[in-house]
Length: 305
Image (tube, rainbow, N blue to C red):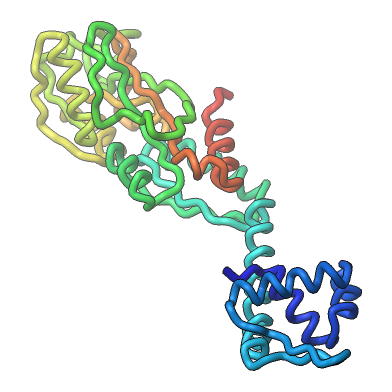
């Protein structure tokens, strides 16, 4: 294997014509230059220099190697400078995947702070709900995934599921409580808290598939199956349908914070249903400065104000 330090020595010997002069140029001794040249010739398996008295000239193999050495060393220098820029957060790229309500609440604050602190770091954003977002992270299609998982009831069996993240670096951000959403003229609109069973006979508007599954699970735990008249992944559409009096819904507080609930009122649900919001990355990626900085800004954006 040819080492870059050996190429630098060969180039210096070719330019100066002797081991002593090359040593002076490189800041090392003549024996050190000689030793490195022997190591290089052993690596390539052929002589690179011909010594005739006090003169020294390159063999054909030596000339070929010197000809390529400039480009190789220039490429290495450029690579070293680019890596140093990334390590110093003067450059770099982070691919972030987030679920929609995280994209509209936590992500803007975090990315604005990241850009202000490290303007050379670029972040791309794509939206996906878990577990799709987590699959993208494991597949190498993103560097950070903003995800969530619902708390299991205390009496639920702790069985592994697709939401398990034991192989990932998990940065907890916040706990997001689900709230009820009813039309502003609804009989329970002015109520401080509502048992989900009080909404058993209402038409329901459901959200994303995973949230829909959670809704059905919570309702069945309260002894009824919700009649879902409308289903949409778009939170503003959920709020609009509720505001038009077409039904009731359960949404995470983070989702409600991302839209203006015109014509609708939020009510506290009892018993409480919560989801854990986290930022995920791979163990090796957690050591990359730009990824670590992004995780830090997401954590700061999630702190209560």
